[in-house]
Length: 274
Ligand code: FES
Image (cartoon, rainbow, N blue to C red; front, side):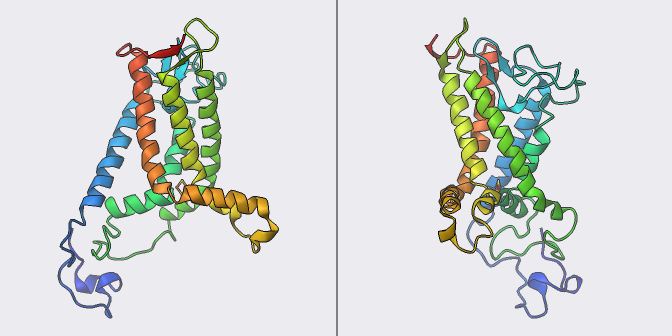
């Protein structure tokens, strides 16, 4: 990465009125470390999730009704028996189509357009800029005013779909309280599934769009005590949005990995009831 030539750019750090500094940055600390770690973290999740979405194995534990969130809802006749909690909406999917294809694009869109993730990948992947006081390599900046980045403004609609998916995941987690021979059962897998759902709700409700939906456009909070209370609660979560964004990436992988290991017989699920 190098700074653009002076005559190539009219704006940014090379704008005529800016100080003429030849070095890309005067920072001497390890400013490159956070963007590097962010890139590695995101890349790890994307690779893992992509591989898991396509393998079509070990996503359902028939004894305990554990279903990985990567395959939920499973609404194709290609899904293994028992895993389609909402019935079959489609016939068999071809092998190249993930069984969770109905929701994966929306979940991906929700994360990609998230305000926190935008900040993370604009800095770490797009270097725009990579860190405070470090010049970016791009010649011009148009922000989110043109295609393709203007699409970021549909984030609110991804939020609505993500809320529905959280309801679906909650239903899956409730159905998973299932014993080996039927009836009620409870094991370590239930704790993992429930923890994942609770954190997914926390992440979803901490969304900036949710904060605006609950408290935006109000001129007087005092006249809308219920919305003010909701906005206050969402704001508390919103303060932890970055933490929840990373935590839920981790819990999604952990939940999927656990279901995969139990389903494949690599480990057995410690049971507390049945
Ligand atoms: Fe991050 Fe909406 S701002 S999910």
